[in-house]
Length: 292
Image (cartoon, rainbow, N blue to C red; front, side, top):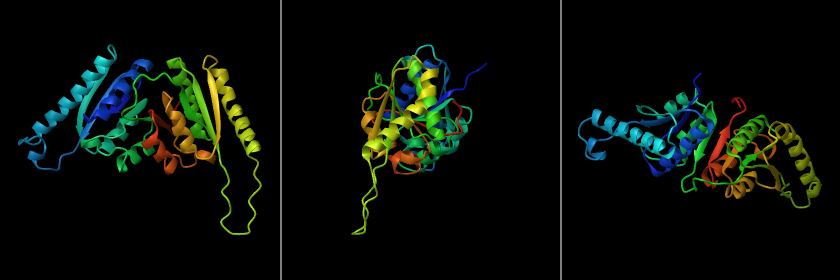
């Protein structure tokens, strides 16, 4: 039985090369094939693309070569893995989302050029990350490629956080590393109106409640993965800041696409945007409906 591919988007940029190398290592780790996709469109004059005058065959050939070079690099980095590479003309969003339907994982770089230009800065990233039917990993450029830190998971008790934990424990066991579960709890803001008394708030009680909820959430996963070393971090305030802070030492940061409590709207609002732009390690996004 053929296993689902890990799919990675490549456009020849340094960031996408980093993503290809990361995806190749992940394919080896999971024992699955790697599929490299280069998507492109062409609306400009021939001279804008290295002076090529013949369209579209010459341009298509250059993108084919780009995909082939990415596949060659993946094989060099991870000898023995099954690799395929293809250049496809069309809308990058549609191509990536279509590939994601049958993929084990979709991997992209944090910035690109050509078909994947501004991948995290505009509609492409928003559509891919929000609507892909498999976990999406955004590999940030400049990150060391052989980290030894823990798998870090943002936890808030939501269904997508449960999926994130399932993938997090699996990743930690495969890599032989620890897992850090991070739970944030809100701090009430002072009232804006003068003379309005602040709401009662006991920070110690809030921390204890968050810790108790987190331990209850982790209990079945500890039982299922007894070999995984688990640590927890309970912190007040912004979940984005707490997760970005710990991402500096993490191998991979995993969060759900939607949550409640501290991680509400984590991909559709400011929290997700901050993680995708500022986390110091690859970020994996999972949805509640995605298989574990």
